[in-house]
Image 1: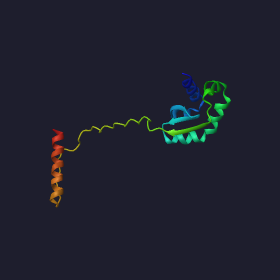
Image 2: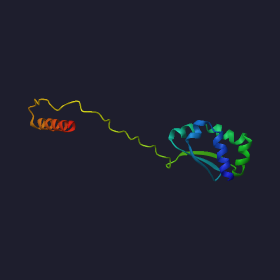
Image 3: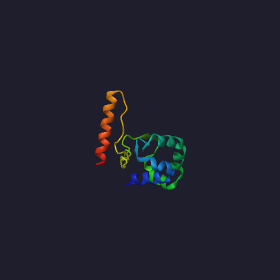
Image 4: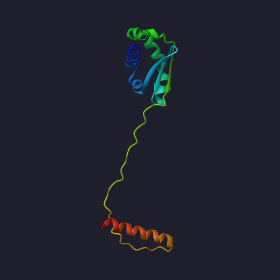
Length: 128
């Protein structure tokens, strides 16, 4: 419970851009680890590292909640357990066929001519 209180207070004291990127926080061997969702959040974290260290040493609520850990270092990493983004399911647009399938095939190549005939039949079947 004490560790969760410490982590919640720490997360709430961070800028909103960093709060969104944190998956979880834990302490191990006097090092505070931040598991982040994306490499962009890692870059942001590294940029604001001094701010986070300053928060830990200056804010009294954080000192009380996290004082038992005696944190010496901060590290961040991109977690492989980040939730995957949902794939968008795009549907095939539905439309009415405007062609009646009545057109002349003026092609000399027999293979291409056969493909046009198949296309013509497909159009006629879809109109029916």
